Length: 249
Length: 104
Image 1 (tube, rainbow over the protein chains, first blue to last red):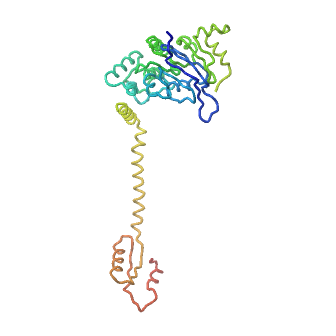
Image 2: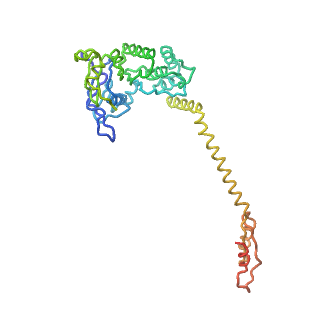
Image 3: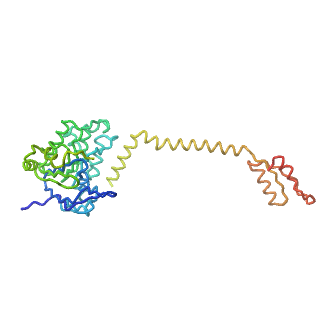
């Protein structure tokens, strides 16, 4: 029996106001349940725009996206309940403690009372978060990243969008995050992940799409893409071959 | 409703932990009111203390004229110099010499 995609992108285009360039140019793509899909591309390629549209934060100029069978154009509220977003920039209130931050985000997802406290306690234990001792402003970058990730997964979403979740953190924090992403992916959560770390993407993702100038220029399983390009020994070689070595804005 | 309460709680916590924000929110307006009160008080006092000299010639010499005269005398703003009752035999205004002496 054919699998139905959990995310089906059809002819998606995004043109920002006061711009003639297409940030996203007629992309069509299907992502299946339980996949760990990596969206890779140089700066300004359209990764964050694509993720923002999929997270219902931006409206597409044309085309449509079906998420779990629901159209992004007509079922934004329902879609928000089944997705989790971990943004690239730390989205925490620095004057609140980790527990207060997580309680706030949990309540926005409709969690409350002892149930919410238990979930927060679980994650704090798992990620080594000191939940009450300090304000978030007094914590390290790695700790903030872990709290940022926790805020996006408190409600145990079906689909998790991660926009460069491991930027600027130490190896230990990165390992905890990557191991946890593997764990929830094995438990059925679909992950859509963007990163500039090719080695991390190669290890984490079951399938990748390379995006440049708003178009998907390659997609498939990482090892297959590398095998199909004989002169490339790893994903970074392939990425440079497809997107070039010129510096981007 | 629970979401809104969470937002209120979060904003309350942020507010009470932001001392600079609290100062701007409460102390700045209080300081502004205090400074404005001082300025206005001194300007009112200047107006009250400098009484305006005035010649009041009551040609009417009736109830309305008396009432106006009494009102001006009772007012703290005018130093009223009342001229004697009207003298129809004299056509020249009798207020002129006083006006030239500084009365208005």
